[in-house]
Length: 86
Image (tube, rainbow, N blue to C red; front, side, top):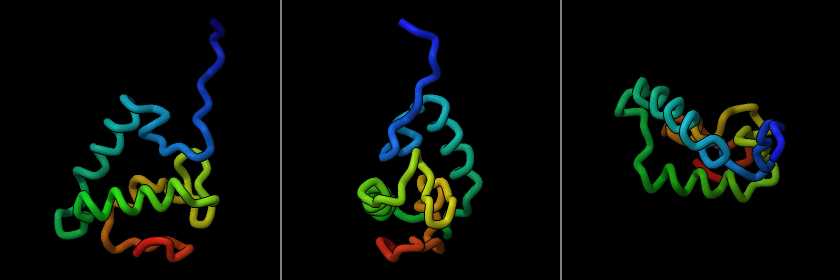
């Protein structure tokens, strides 16, 4: 066993690569998002699925706009720069 840091895969969302720490972080950020701005759960899942299938996803970041996709997908006012979701 080595002490090398774990590098998340390029097609992973950050909550998959760093489940405990990142989920806590995402939950804290989403808790500050006004309810009228949050997407519903089904829309959020669909958006994340589109991001995971996109060639622009790199370690949880959209290389098209630089966002953390798990946060951008939660805000109903946000759009995909490649029109893969609205």
